[in-house]
Image 1: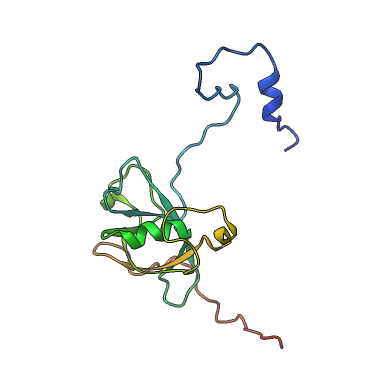
Image 2: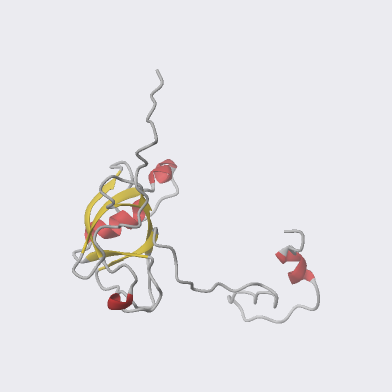
Length: 166
Protein backbone atom coordinates (compact mmCIF):
# COMPACT_ATOMS: atom_id res chain seq x y z
CA UNK A 1 0.00 0.00 0.00
CA UNK A 2 2.88 2.36 0.67
CA UNK A 3 3.74 2.34 -3.05
CA UNK A 4 0.13 2.70 -4.24
CA UNK A 5 -0.61 5.70 -6.42
CA UNK A 6 -4.05 7.28 -6.50
CA UNK A 7 -5.53 6.63 -9.92
CA UNK A 8 -6.67 10.25 -10.20
CA UNK A 9 -3.10 11.47 -9.76
CA UNK A 10 -1.96 9.40 -12.74
CA UNK A 11 -4.84 10.69 -14.85
CA UNK A 12 -4.07 14.31 -14.07
CA UNK A 13 -0.36 13.99 -14.92
CA UNK A 14 0.61 14.96 -18.43
CA UNK A 15 -1.39 16.08 -21.44
CA UNK A 16 -4.83 14.68 -22.04
CA UNK A 17 -5.35 12.55 -25.13
CA UNK A 18 -8.39 13.39 -27.23
CA UNK A 19 -11.18 10.87 -26.91
CA UNK A 20 -14.15 10.10 -29.08
CA UNK A 21 -17.54 11.32 -27.86
CA UNK A 22 -19.32 8.83 -25.57
CA UNK A 23 -16.24 6.59 -25.27
CA UNK A 24 -14.61 5.71 -21.95
CA UNK A 25 -11.29 7.35 -21.16
CA UNK A 26 -8.25 5.18 -21.49
CA UNK A 27 -6.78 3.86 -18.25
CA UNK A 28 -3.32 5.09 -17.24
CA UNK A 29 -0.47 2.93 -18.54
CA UNK A 30 0.44 1.54 -15.12
CA UNK A 31 -3.11 0.44 -14.30
CA UNK A 32 -3.16 -3.31 -13.52
CA UNK A 33 -5.28 -5.48 -15.79
CA UNK A 34 -7.59 -8.26 -14.67
CA UNK A 35 -6.48 -11.78 -15.44
CA UNK A 36 -8.28 -15.11 -15.26
CA UNK A 37 -6.78 -17.65 -12.90
CA UNK A 38 -7.57 -21.24 -11.99
CA UNK A 39 -10.03 -20.21 -9.29
CA UNK A 40 -10.94 -21.71 -5.94
CA UNK A 41 -13.09 -24.81 -5.47
CA UNK A 42 -15.42 -23.04 -3.04
CA UNK A 43 -16.42 -20.43 -5.63
CA UNK A 44 -18.12 -21.25 -8.90
CA UNK A 45 -20.30 -20.02 -11.72
CA UNK A 46 -23.89 -20.74 -12.69
CA UNK A 47 -24.85 -21.41 -16.28
CA UNK A 48 -28.39 -21.64 -17.57
CA UNK A 49 -30.49 -21.66 -20.75
CA UNK A 50 -28.38 -20.68 -23.72
CA UNK A 51 -25.18 -19.88 -21.81
CA UNK A 52 -22.73 -22.65 -22.71
CA UNK A 53 -20.19 -23.82 -20.15
CA UNK A 54 -16.81 -22.92 -21.58
CA UNK A 55 -18.17 -20.00 -23.59
CA UNK A 56 -17.03 -16.43 -23.25
CA UNK A 57 -20.05 -15.25 -21.24
CA UNK A 58 -20.71 -15.90 -17.57
CA UNK A 59 -23.46 -14.35 -15.51
CA UNK A 60 -23.75 -15.33 -11.88
CA UNK A 61 -21.35 -16.71 -9.33
CA UNK A 62 -21.93 -18.60 -6.12
CA UNK A 63 -20.05 -19.51 -2.96
CA UNK A 64 -20.22 -22.94 -1.40
CA UNK A 65 -21.76 -22.82 2.07
CA UNK A 66 -20.72 -25.08 4.91
CA UNK A 67 -23.57 -27.56 5.20
CA UNK A 68 -24.03 -31.11 6.38
CA UNK A 69 -25.03 -32.34 2.92
CA UNK A 70 -22.24 -30.42 1.15
CA UNK A 71 -24.72 -29.30 -1.47
CA UNK A 72 -25.58 -25.66 -0.67
CA UNK A 73 -24.48 -22.57 -2.59
CA UNK A 74 -25.04 -18.87 -1.82
CA UNK A 75 -25.73 -16.52 -4.72
CA UNK A 76 -27.52 -13.24 -5.43
CA UNK A 77 -31.31 -12.97 -5.38
CA UNK A 78 -31.34 -11.50 -8.88
CA UNK A 79 -29.37 -14.56 -10.03
CA UNK A 80 -32.04 -16.76 -8.43
CA UNK A 81 -34.59 -15.05 -10.66
CA UNK A 82 -32.70 -16.23 -13.73
CA UNK A 83 -32.24 -19.71 -12.30
CA UNK A 84 -35.95 -19.99 -11.46
CA UNK A 85 -36.92 -18.99 -15.00
CA UNK A 86 -34.47 -21.43 -16.63
CA UNK A 87 -35.02 -25.03 -17.63
CA UNK A 88 -31.35 -26.07 -17.97
CA UNK A 89 -29.17 -24.89 -15.10
CA UNK A 90 -25.85 -26.01 -13.62
CA UNK A 91 -23.26 -24.84 -11.11
CA UNK A 92 -19.57 -25.24 -11.99
CA UNK A 93 -17.29 -25.13 -8.92
CA UNK A 94 -13.90 -23.56 -9.59
CA UNK A 95 -15.04 -22.61 -13.10
CA UNK A 96 -12.10 -22.20 -15.44
CA UNK A 97 -12.73 -19.69 -18.21
CA UNK A 98 -13.15 -21.04 -21.75
CA UNK A 99 -12.65 -24.70 -20.75
CA UNK A 100 -15.26 -27.18 -21.93
CA UNK A 101 -17.36 -29.05 -19.32
CA UNK A 102 -15.20 -32.19 -19.52
CA UNK A 103 -12.14 -30.14 -18.54
CA UNK A 104 -13.67 -28.35 -15.54
CA UNK A 105 -11.83 -29.56 -12.41
CA UNK A 106 -14.93 -30.59 -10.42
CA UNK A 107 -17.44 -31.22 -13.19
CA UNK A 108 -20.99 -29.89 -13.33
CA UNK A 109 -23.57 -29.86 -10.55
CA UNK A 110 -27.27 -29.75 -11.40
CA UNK A 111 -29.20 -26.98 -9.70
CA UNK A 112 -32.02 -28.27 -7.52
CA UNK A 113 -34.10 -26.00 -5.31
CA UNK A 114 -33.69 -22.23 -5.24
CA UNK A 115 -34.57 -20.39 -2.03
CA UNK A 116 -35.06 -16.61 -2.17
CA UNK A 117 -36.86 -14.22 0.17
CA UNK A 118 -40.35 -13.70 -1.35
CA UNK A 119 -40.12 -9.94 -0.69
CA UNK A 120 -37.29 -9.62 -3.23
CA UNK A 121 -38.66 -8.78 -6.72
CA UNK A 122 -39.07 -11.74 -9.04
CA UNK A 123 -37.66 -9.86 -12.04
CA UNK A 124 -34.61 -7.69 -12.46
CA UNK A 125 -32.65 -5.93 -9.75
CA UNK A 126 -33.63 -3.17 -7.40
CA UNK A 127 -32.11 -0.30 -5.50
CA UNK A 128 -35.08 -0.04 -3.18
CA UNK A 129 -34.97 -1.00 0.49
CA UNK A 130 -35.51 -4.66 -0.44
CA UNK A 131 -32.09 -4.67 -2.13
CA UNK A 132 -30.83 -5.89 1.26
CA UNK A 133 -32.61 -9.13 0.38
CA UNK A 134 -30.59 -9.70 -2.81
CA UNK A 135 -29.34 -13.15 -1.83
CA UNK A 136 -30.48 -16.72 -2.34
CA UNK A 137 -29.49 -20.27 -1.50
CA UNK A 138 -29.37 -23.03 -4.09
CA UNK A 139 -29.09 -26.78 -3.64
CA UNK A 140 -26.94 -28.68 -6.12
CA UNK A 141 -26.22 -32.33 -6.93
CA UNK A 142 -23.38 -33.84 -8.98
CA UNK A 143 -24.09 -34.79 -12.57
CA UNK A 144 -22.51 -37.77 -14.35
CA UNK A 145 -18.75 -37.30 -14.36
CA UNK A 146 -18.70 -34.81 -11.48
CA UNK A 147 -16.89 -35.55 -8.28
CA UNK A 148 -19.29 -36.99 -5.73
CA UNK A 149 -20.84 -34.15 -3.78
CA UNK A 150 -18.67 -31.17 -3.12
CA UNK A 151 -16.14 -33.20 -1.14
CA UNK A 152 -13.83 -30.19 -0.85
CA UNK A 153 -16.57 -28.10 0.78
CA UNK A 154 -15.80 -27.24 4.38
CA UNK A 155 -17.54 -29.61 6.77
CA UNK A 156 -19.13 -28.60 10.04
CA UNK A 157 -16.53 -29.21 12.71
CA UNK A 158 -17.47 -32.02 15.10
CA UNK A 159 -15.45 -30.24 17.80
CA UNK A 160 -17.32 -26.97 17.56
CA UNK A 161 -19.94 -26.56 20.21
CA UNK A 162 -23.14 -24.79 19.48
CA UNK A 163 -24.10 -22.39 22.18
CA UNK A 164 -27.34 -20.59 22.72
CA UNK A 165 -27.97 -17.40 24.60
CA UNK A 166 -31.17 -16.43 26.30
